[in-house]
Image 1 (cartoon, rainbow, N blue to C red):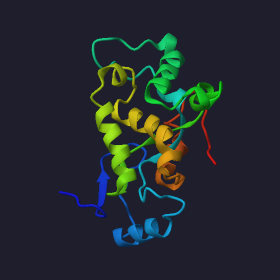
Image 2 (cartoon, one colour):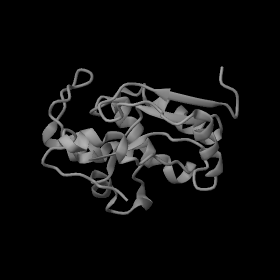
Image 3 (cartoon, one colour):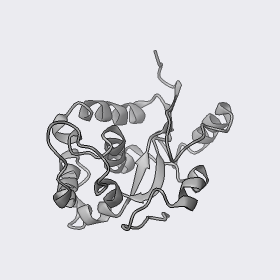
Length: 189
């Protein structure tokens, strides 16, 4: 059981993040605490990748999830519908919400660090609930991974969440360009 204020470190395997957390955990926890004002969630919810959401949603090598085949000819429309369904796009988001996010970087939660607090719990509760919504997850290329990415965009401002942008974690993949197709990349800011 995780108590309020406790830390949770999650790690699984990944082609991008091929190494675990290298820093001693107390140093990482201290670093997150020191940056509470800029990262009130006190979490690293995901690692930002250089590939775009367009790249992720247009990959033809990803099998369908569920009984409905992926409609590759309408990948953008499916993506935009998901943004509205999840709450990334709202009437106040502006008419460029879908195209702006189409070119935004994707994320991966191969490893993440969480301090149990209200902000992190809110994000994880939404992620868990939406993970059971077949009408949403059936259209996500990498199911839980894609859902995490979209929810990062949904909650980042309200919950003060940040993703880690550390290209050195996946330099090998960059050098081989195995994470890219002709769509291009988002080198990030």
